[in-house]
Image (cartoon, rainbow, N blue to C red; front, side, top):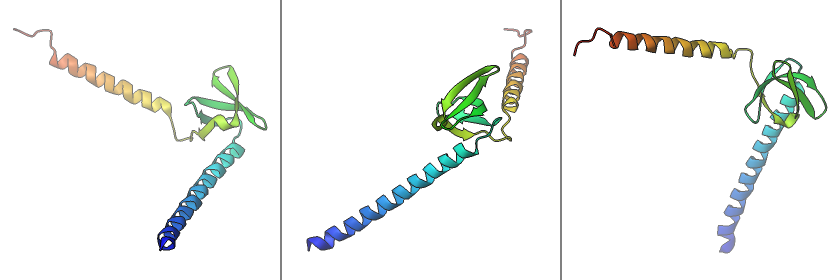
Length: 117
C-alpha cells in the first residue's frame, strides 16, 4: 500500500530534478557562448548594470572602457549580455526632451500671465 503512494511521488520528484538540471545546463551553455563570442568593440552590460565597451579580452578577464579613456579589468563572468546595434540610447533622451518641451508649452498656455482674478 505504501509503495502505491510513494512510487508516483518519487517519479514526480525525479522528473522535476531532471528538467531543473536541464534548464540550468542550457543557461550555463548560453553564458559560455556569450563569453566566447565577445570581441573588441562590443557594447555590453555587466551584472551590476554598467554599460561598457570591450577593449581587450583575456582567458578569464575582459578589459572594459566604462568612460572615455577609463579602462577597467573585469572577470568574464561579470558580462551579462551584449547591447545590440539597434539600441540607440540618444533617441531615448531626445524623446524625453520632446516630452519636457510639450509639458512646458502646455503650462505656458494654461497659465497665462494676463489672468484676471
